[in-house]
Length: 130
Image (tube, rainbow, N blue to C red; front, side):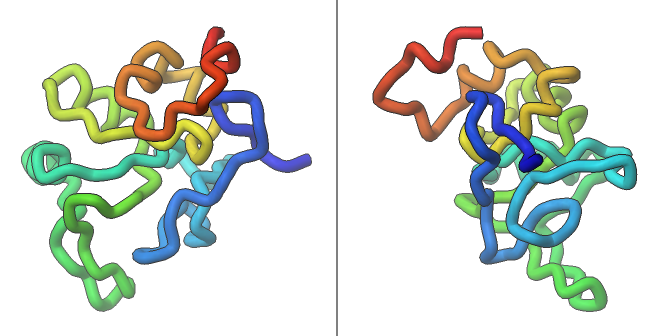
């Protein structure tokens, strides 16, 4: 069975440039190996990247040894639920692509918070009600 997004549909790809996802397949899929729950498809902002650097999660600095180019504002990236929630609490949450955000995140982050940062609101809003 394929993984579902927070809207109840099939999980859509998050991003391939750069290639994201815990499994580096472009999707915010998760599994037992993914202890960090890389389940939120974020469209990163400069504020979010700076916040992540300050908490010890530098997503902007390239790491060529890991084929990681570093993120720039506007990139889509599967971020961990806890780091996104911390950024939200600190007023620096990134935008969220709901169709590409894994439903597994709902164990950690409520849909209301994600919906408040959505950048892909569907035309039929009835599907957003929990």
